[in-house]
Image 1 (cartoon, rainbow, N blue to C red):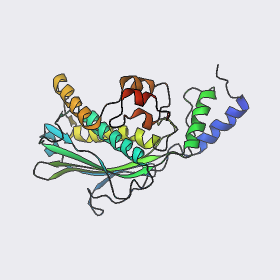
Image 2 (cartoon, rainbow, N blue to C red):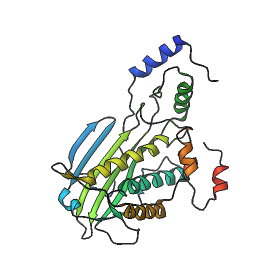
Image 3 (cartoon, rainbow, N blue to C red):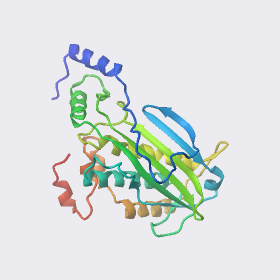
Length: 278
């Protein structure tokens, strides 16, 4: 049975955590190749923990039906502090999030097929997570008598990504410069340097989906039928892989690292389950 923290200790830890910033500063990122540094974008959000600049042609997006998600890439220098495995995991997470989050509203085609819109993404910054701070958060959460104890705010990571959507004639209908830091209340801690960046890839996917759905003036794109959605999701799996169902369910109860969750190319299920990095 897990022991609760003595009340004086809990009373000290929790107010200290509350006094510190609950969100990590979003990584600034390096200049990417998809969006020019001097591009005229509308600043939608400008906070240290979260920023978003964008330019969008809602009418052109509203006319589109098919969507192709191209494999993400790293901007030059953005992956300098990452291992090859960490790099591959982040790329898979970003690609899958953009694809799966869009599958309910577009017909997603295979990577080699033409589409009304092609979505490209470039990772411009990865704020690494301090493993020690993440472990402290995990231990504190287990021992604390307070339900849903926020994680220790120090050492949290972040992610910054540029996203561009283009029509078949090469016209850009969406340019998005996005950056987000982890949140002590909503971003679960895992003992991985890329744990927060990987988790935030899904936040990116939701934000991009929201932009693609919004036709303006209160109008929003309708969901596709289930058959189309299943085909779209199959194309996502073909392009970005699939997380094992058992592993996906286990993530709700265990702080599994992205390196454990993401299948390695060519690795068997037995090899995946025997890896010690959790």
